[in-house]
Amino acid sequence: ETGVTQSPTHLIKTRGQQVTLRCSSQSGHNTVSWYQQALGQGPQFIFQYYREEENGRGNFPPRFSGLQFPNYSSELNVNALELDDSALYLCASRVALFLGGPYSTDTQYFGPGTRLTVL
Amino acid sequence: AQSVTQLDSQVPVFEEAPVELRCNYSSSVSVYLFWYVQYPNQGLQLLLKYLSGSTLVKGINGFEAEFNKSQTSFHLRKPSVHISDTAEYFCAVSENSNTGKLIFGQGTTLQVKP
Figure 1 (tube, one colour):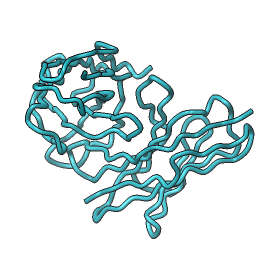
Figure 2 (cartoon, each protein chain N blue to C red):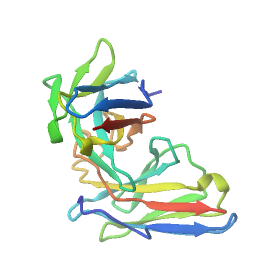
Figure 3 (cartoon, chains in turn red, brown):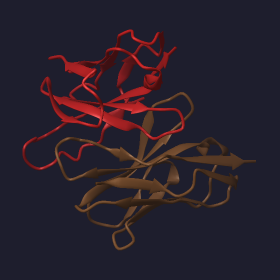
Figure 4 (spheres, rainbow over the protein chains, first blue to last red):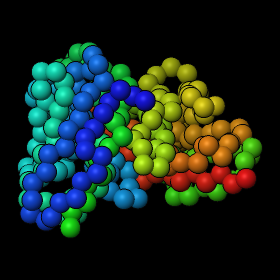
């Protein structure tokens, strides 16, 4: 158990719809990252949030957006769902000790994921 | 650009036999290296990580990995596997930056047979 929780566990949506996935970070962690893991693939970095601001983004279109709240919980929102968005979505939290300077080498702790199916 | 290649998509092995899961990476800067394990219908669990120092890294569940800078490799080993080690294993690399971005390989399925 990592202390990172995600909801819901499974979700089925229709193409064109919008979806919100939620993540609750491990206590004391101030940074959260989101990853998309397609079937049979390794996870791909979507973005990272630190102090409620996005500060790193992978190769994903703007219809993927996020929020981080003061209590370090976060959301991943995906608009205009496409069939290829079907995947396991993972969030990972960690402590970023000093951004803008030396990299925080603290381990990222992953949640169990949300399985999104787009029909 | 960084990339990670896991050379074997599936590795079948008998229980109590040794195993090596291979990982090669490419990067123009110094990196941190990780191995994660994913059991069916679960998230990722960190097995071990290399940040600096000794090139031989020991992790949980009896796994270890060796960082080889000249060969840009970070192979994972276990001297004697158990049925419970059956899972998907991912190698990942992170640049020395503040984005926290991990780049993962495609994964290797370890199948331990009785």
